[in-house]
Image (cartoon, rainbow, N blue to C red; front, side, top):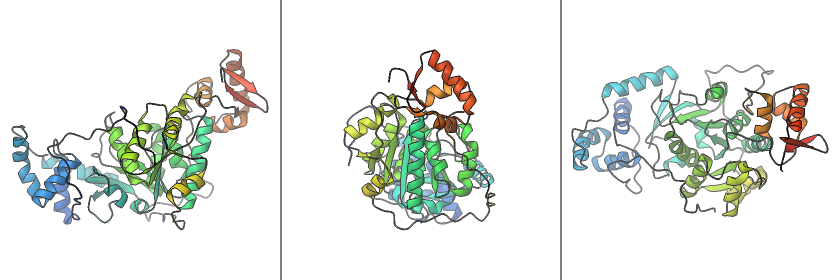
Amino acid sequence: MWTAPDSQLHYTPDPGFYEAPVGFVPPPARGDDDRFTRLRLIRSRRVGPATYLRLLAEHGSAAAALDALPEVAKAAGVQGYEPCPEPVIKAELRAAARAGARMLCLGDSEYPEHLATISDAPPILWAMGQTALMMRPCVAIVGTRNASSLGGRMVRKLAGELGEAGFTIVSGLARGIDALAHAASLDTGTIAVMAGGVDVVYPTENADLAARITKAGLRLSEQPLGLQPQARHFPRRNRIVSGLAQGVILIEAAARSGSLITARLAADQGREVMAVPGHPMDSRASGGNILLRDGATLVRSAEDVIEALGAPGHIMRPAAPETAQAAPESATPAVPSTDNSGPIEARILAVLGPVPTPEDQLVRDLQTTPRDLAQALAVLELSGHLRRAPGGMVHLTGS
């Protein structure tokens, strides 16, 4: 198994009053009042997962922990401390009801068992969709937001085949590799972990995909509903992505990227770290190649993943939710590829790399016409940005 080397790619938990107690798992929540109090506890200032668990372990209940919290804060040098106000929690619960989100408490039977084993498991999760997907074997697929044409083809193939084999595909709903992994596994089961509130789609271009995931898959977040994601939220999101999964597959990522943070978290959590190799001259492949150099499992196909993790057993397709209407048979799944806004020349350069790519594949990936593509390729060739190769292939200049 790959072991993360020392680097600056760290996830730093929120500072709290305590370190987490070893091996403690809270009992299931007892009714709405207990859920309300647990939510109020974790939403209180300087109460992260570690402090939450320590308070429950020492005081026996969320209510008793809340009562003790001001004295705990005072002992830590924080004067005039007050727990999260009740109206804030009531507003969050109303927002959850409007969005159709369900609260899962650490210790509940519906809480994902695999995620519960990590040291900083989220005390509260908001879920929209089919929670049963978390009970199946999960594989996380992560990577660059600027996927190449070859990277896009690889993620569609891997996510589709692993889904057919019985795995739930987990990712972070970012543009690029994440979105492609979700789209390719909509029919077999996919989980999108949100950096902000479970009702806040970021980036907004994935709104349609997120709506489809709500109907056919699952959206998860530990954050309050309505929260717009900020930079510090994404590493926290990444620990949930890796924590849900038995293994993490990296497909195209720069040497210093959020995807490498996810790989490090996966190693720290005892998950299998896997990577798809890439061309050494393509900067998008540098992160995966570094992982492979340091001992990550090389992935060429779904068979490599199944060999590393073991077969998940029989295929388990998620049942259609009772409230969702079946899509027409002729409906075409939304398969995001690249950002289809902006000049076509820029979009071509974004998906090309050192490895020659077929022109007909570019037509499909960029959702353009052969005529428009040919004109754009001619412009880029004349300007020296790309070269043609035999067999209708093109690649970036200098490769």
